[in-house]
Length: 278
Image (cartoon, rainbow, N blue to C red; front, side, top):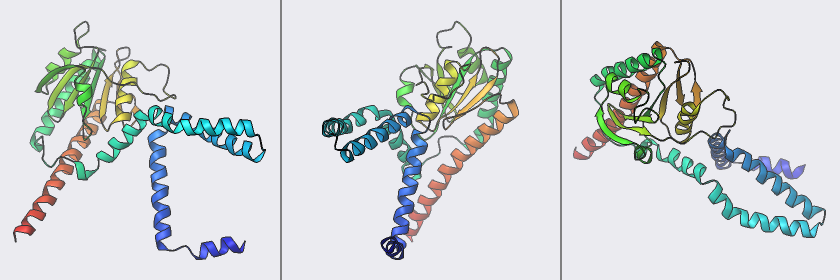
């Protein structure tokens, strides 16, 4: 008891800061692996660690030897098994403002036009019950996904988007990738979500939309081929039965935040440059 009392009394400001940093790090790791294959693997590792310690206490030498060797080899295996999660974590760090590109790729006056074109296309596809998958690239680059499709590099227009997703055409089954006011590619293949709690009634488009939103900061619009319902996938979460007005608001928030964030970075560098000159 005295030991713990002395330990608490010796805790300083640096120790508190240290504990806060560790707690935040563990929380971020948890949010990255939650409801993915990695969560189940971590539970298995915890069971192995407990079993190893128990075998040591109970003097089960053979069992303990096997478990210890398994854990030693497991360190290398973890790097292979957790490769997607490690990549996702590094991409999360890379999306910090320090690494953001310092120029604006779309003018603010063009935002309303782009949004209305996308909303009009989504509404038309929904009415006709034509399946569609539109992905918006933000800070995380989707170059690998773009390479799986057909490069377009055309201006965003409702007519072009509708024509891409017309059934029985070469590109209708894949995803469209949009960056700012440009359609980068169509017919792209997306990674499917590993979330085990996804409803069984959701099809491949919804799983692909969730998958790309789990592995990046991309936002995806899904139009159901069966019901015509519009869904939004963002940061690993799926919002279903989104109406047109809500869709418009989500896109406005996304584009304006994107421009504001980049404009803020430009203003910061401009202020630094002006101070250096003076």
